[in-house]
Length: 166
Image (cartoon, rainbow, N blue to C red; front, side, top):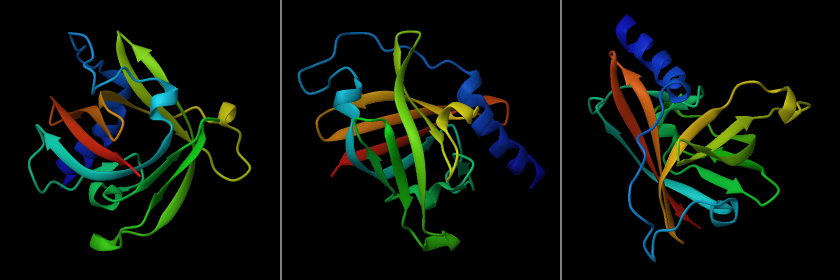
């Protein structure tokens, strides 16, 4: 159990510490380079998978809830970059909640990264020093895929989020 708790803590920390592998080749007609205008809008996380993490592992994401609580979550990403996400699942003891965020895109080693900071009531984004960054590994008009690099049991692993535009 201690190893699992340590692994979960490492998951979040390593998102910032490990650079993601760059993709080669040009974007196709159906897959475009990520820009804030192509990412803005309303999205739903329809699937979350693991690569390098055993199926059934209890993983907490974004320092908030179980990975299962984020399935079906609604992400509102307006053009002013002040958005939110809403957890609506009540499975596995999940609690419904809405979290305000400030989001943007960041280029890291030629890779488009979606980054966001949680902002609470009365907080200004400039005063929030911690946030989250995931690779935008695929983007079309209707689908976006995030890939978060994490450290699991001292090995590089990934959490892959699939989002559908609503």
